[in-house]
Length: 106
Length: 283
Image (cartoon, rainbow over all chains, first blue to last red; front, side, top):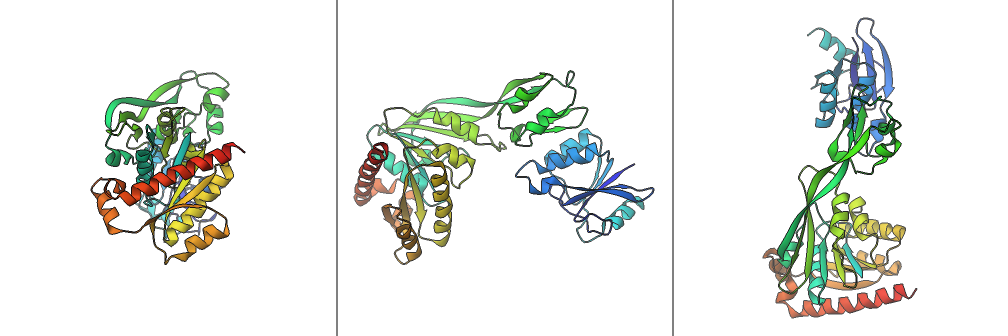
C-alpha cells in the first residue's frame, strides 16, 4: 500500500499542504517502513488543469490513498476512476508524518 | 472596417460607448463579443431573428484501440487530457478544440465529435443596427471558440463595432486582434489607469492602433491625463461623471438618446475614428 500526502516540503517533517493540485510536493509513503519518495509538483506553476494533472501523477506513482486538505471536482473524478481513496480535511498545521500516523491509527 | 471597444478594467463603460457609437453610425453592425456576460442587447434592444447553437470539436478517443502511450496528453497545451494507463480521460470544458492530440496520435485512434458551447444570436434594432452576440453555456471555461463564431457575423463593407470582454486575456485578444482601430475605455480612477496600461501593452504587442475614451471623467484625477500626455496617447473623448447619465443607463436607456450633447460627442468621435483609420491605412 502507498499513501500520497500533499506537502509543503520534501520531508516527513514538512507541513501538510491543504491544496491538492497546487501543493509543492507529493510524498509517496510506504506506511510499513515509513520510507517515502518526494515528488515535486509541476502543477504549482500551471495556469490551469493543475488538479487533474496532479491526480494523474499520483495515480501513476501507484498511490492507493490520498491525504490532503481538499480536492477539486475534476481531480476527484480522475482519482475515483482509479479507485484511489480520498481522505480530505487535513489542516496545514500538522506534519506529514503525523498525518500518516493519524490515518493509520483510525 | 472593424472598430473594437476594449478596456483593461471591467465596468468602465465599454458597452455604453460601443452601443452609443453604433447608434450614431448609419447601418452599423454591433457585435457583442463578451460572451460570458453579454449585455449590449439591454441597451440596443434588438429583435432577434435567429439563434444558432455554436459548437466546438472535442477529441473522441477509442479506448479499446488506444495503447496509452500518452502522446496526446503530452501535446495538450491546456491540460485537458490525463493518462490513467487504462483510460485517457478528457475534461471537456478545458479543451480548446485545437486538434493537436488527433494530429500527433501515433495509433490514429482519435476522432472528433461536436459539443455545444453556447448560442450565437442575430437580430436587428429599430434603428436598423445589425446586431449579433453570443451566450456561453454555464460551466464552459473557454470563451474564445464562441467569440470566433460570433465574429463570423462581421459584415465587410460596413462599420463593425466589436464590444470586447473586459481584461487582457485571450478573450480580449481574440476580439480585438484584427481590428482597424481599438477604442480603450477607461475611467478616472487608479484602477482604471492601472488596467488601461495593461490593455495598452497588449495592443502595442499585437500591433493594433488605438485611442482612449475617459468615461466618468473627473478632472481632479490628473494622473490619467499626465500618463496619456507623457506617452503621446490620444484622448478621443471625455464623458463627464454625471448622475443623470448613470440613471439613464440603469434604466436600460442609452444616455445619448436622452441627452443631445452626448449624441454630438459620439458623432464627433465617429468622425475622428474614421480619420484615424484612413491615416493608419494610408501607412
